[in-house]
Image 1 (cartoon, rainbow, N blue to C red):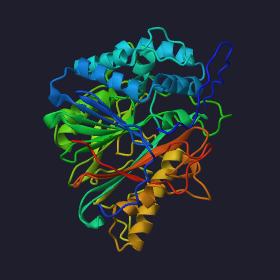
Image 2: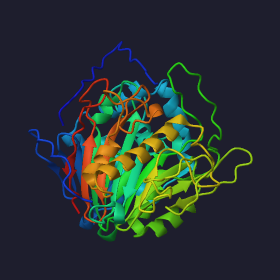
Image 3: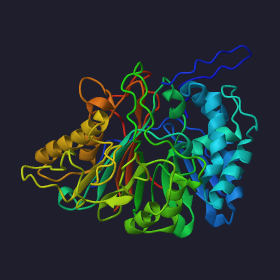
Image 4: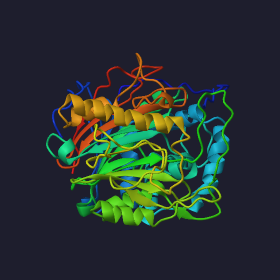
Length: 467
């Protein structure tokens, strides 16, 4: 992968710690000259220029530990700077990174992860040749640092994302069409994360899936099965993030209780995707579990899309619950109705989600949070506009236009409703356009093309799973 930064390490170096459908889509990225793929008996790691393409083939009979170890060895061979890159991101993005790592490592035992995935992670750590002692910013990667990446949603927090689904009479072909953004922390550190973009295909019979995310992350952020079943996670914190860097932080409304053991958000989802075949099965499984933090899953299949609202905690008097929201679900008072035409009737062939609960009875972290109100409004207005212009039916290129919407002359803050967004706290790191019926997938990967901002226009490339 073309290096967009360089890490210089040495004695006396002071690291600055700073925080803070399925119609033709855009043309593919012109491929750069790439290094040969690193291929082992069960694992392939290939540099695709904008991302790493990884295949793990469990049909070879490898155990999870063996598979993880082979993956780690292949990553180091293909990308020797991987440990320094991830370690460098922690040093850059987390103020007081050593303290963060200590606190996070103390929380690992409170997160329940299936033994298969633990074995895979242990093998990955051994294959990467990680060190035992954590010293953030030393250019080496410790086991704790790798595990923090994989437990991020459980021991720290997640990020700002949005998603939309249309189908039936709203789709030019009648197929289900989806779009989704992944927002990651800015903090002047996005050059590090741009080096970690990855597409992972796991070949394992009925458990096969394709996942788009970050190299070395073994849970699910955005993923789908060969039958088109699709999942994408979104944060849903109850506390309002700071609008400006100088603002006083808002108190955490309901802190996680790490004295209890609860399920991992992203690894529970991987288990669900590997072992179930329908939205209903996944919804039943994920809403029955307990977690440390509130969150959402945008889910779709070849017929429709829904949103899992895992509202597992709230302040005194809270009466919410985990549930699956669909087009028939009544919304909380004050939430803008999902109306896309002049009928005044909520649409029944599309659905959207931002970082908030909107189902009636769940905790309202929507109407009092401008970043959620404004992005929800942008989704509705952009869908309306595109439907009016395209005769009431959309394709993937139309969803691209919606998902990359911004106001002004460049992408701005989520607080003003930009869906393709960049500010001091969070930026659009990846955007996905996916059709479950055909498995057509287009992805924009942010690679620090613009040091302080985002590329215009964002260029999507077609990505094919290696099932």
